[in-house]
Amino acid sequence: MVNKLYLLLITLFLSSYFYSIVEEDPLPALGDYSSASISLSGEYELGRLWLAMYRGSSREHSDPLMRTYLEDLIYRLSETSEVRDRRFEFIILEDESINAFAAPGGIIGINLGMFLNTKREGELASVMCHELAHLSQRHYARSQNRSSPLANALMILASIAVAAASRNPEAIVIAPAAMQQMSINYTRSNEKEADRIGFNNLVKAGFDPNDMTMMFQRMQDKYQREDSEQFSYLMTHPLPSERLTDMRIRAANISKPFEGSFRDNLDFYFMQKRSEIWAEKDTKKLTKKYRKDLKSDQKNISLSSRYGLALALKKDKKYEESFKILRELIKENPNNLVLESSLMEIHLSAKNYYEAISLGKNILEIHDNNYAASILLADAYIENNQSEVAEKILKDLAKNRETDPNVWFRLAEAQGLSGNILELHRSRAEYFILTGRHDAAVFQLKEALSLSQNLFEVRESIIRRLEEIFAAKRALTELS
Image (cartoon, one colour):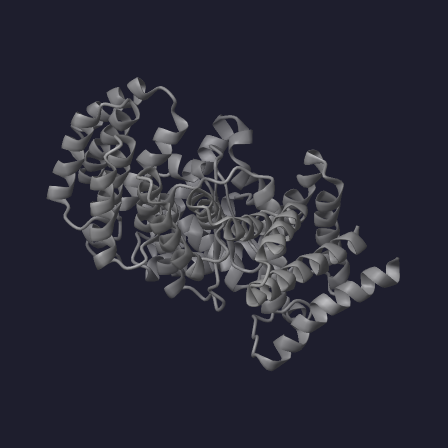
């Protein structure tokens, strides 16, 4: 059994190692030895393996507008970062606790609680810059034990294998817990390095240098006063006083331009309101809060409160007032994609499908392949009994987002409604693969195979996909 485990890991990681010999892979002197133990490609594969299992056991938030915003923010920040491999994967979790994490291979995770507990875009960006620094400096690879990097990887993969093989919901928790802990339980020197590099990234990206200190100081203060379970970020990213002092010194040494020139995107405040609408079930309470905040002398607060009020009214099916508020906002802020996409949402909720379709088509004529508009337009076509058109939109989207389970889930729905049962099974299989449910994926592909008949290219593609799944399952079974 030991030999099987060893050979399996040798196969997995030596392939990554030889890849790393071909590419240059310089790291700072600290921990540089580990670049030979897990390469960039090895981290990528390890991260994707974990993410599938994690998605299968967590509550992922599928809001297309929020995902679009987060992707745009991270890619903007990555342009001024030291991250080399920008094949990111994002997961937004339906959790009100304050947490974010970076896992090997460009995995960026964030709880909705981060939107609920930040007051400026720069504060959220400071956390994202810190996590990007963990990725760019490859702190996971550098944390591996010099003498037994394979044993450390084995611990992670074995926990995933147990979760996958046992079919026990409690066991599945082992995989994300182990991997997330491995990905963020860094040394004090790792954390200080991520502070320094993340701070530099934040400043280069145009945010206020004080945002990082303000964010972490407020989190630390609230952590000491309130329920510690709401602050899982600080449990895994402890902030001793010297780190906060270092942040303040760095911020003080930056020559500051005019304060109004710092980046602070209005869309961040819109995302805050979307998070609040999700978290607060009492819409009357939110409506009262937003009407009060309309009087704020801060432009972003008053504008976003109007947006939140429109969303709350939509939730209460008070469409006439909701439409009025949102159309006024669009008139004042033309070409804002969040507002225009939100107008589509209200039309969908009000069953105005033709209006939603018209608006979605107009958006995509200017912003080709926009994720949020594409998803909402597909939803509108499905609701309007035009599932064949929705299927085409989602198939085009899947070509560029083949690792997004939300796209495959919606595509399967459209194919089922349009009677394309063969492709329905294939899309469901992709969704199950991306959420770590290999047995369910195999069942769907076998159903598709039985329907493929003389479609030889399709049959070959299905058989090839089955072989890939069986290979992954054999690896997981041997590890367990």
